[in-house]
Length: 305
Picture (tube, rainbow, N blue to C red):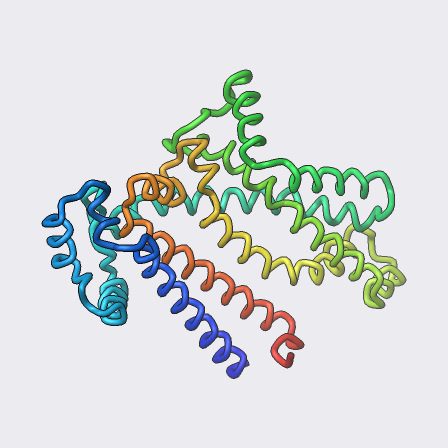
């Protein structure tokens, strides 16, 4: 386990390092970084001041090391548009994104696990086909279209939930349903496949031969093993939810990291954009590492392979 842990930590560190290089290169991909920061129509003397202020005339390697050192100390620089430290800005927005991601994941698991179990137990029946259809719709419907349908029905017609904002937990219900339904299909398929495999194993047949109730065999013996691969997918999907909720946060006007990244692109606020990209990448790497370690702990065969 120690060797496996060491390898995974080294690999995660290298991936995070590559992500930091990409985040640093974000500003430089615009061509002349000083011109990009100064904006169109800037005077040569303004560009010269920016070059001197940010040390853009130094070699790229030295600029990267200096930038990475500041980031490791928690200094992401100052926002050009909001005129505040980027770290403070991200800290304020991060809470809304985490609430939305966790709520979406909870809704998705609450839908996908029962559906996956039912589809496996009644494999080949109309129940299985109905679950497959619902799953397929979740994957086929664009998230923005589902979001608009939910707003029209539950916010405008029924007035059960607010259409936008982030003042209370009720504001997160519709966007969480949208994101939760969107990520449900892979969970449902994984649970269904795991349950079908588990139900055909000898230990389940033995449990049935002992006369145990069907619900106890399904929930205690089969589902427990079927959920092992779901752990890895939970971490991956949580990372995707944290980093990929830009459209939903924009539609529902939730002041989170995704909406901040969207604003930063529009305002050409590169320090904020760099910090958001780097933070989301590191979170994704960390979640994947945790999932791998949990899976390795649950299934020793992964450590050997």
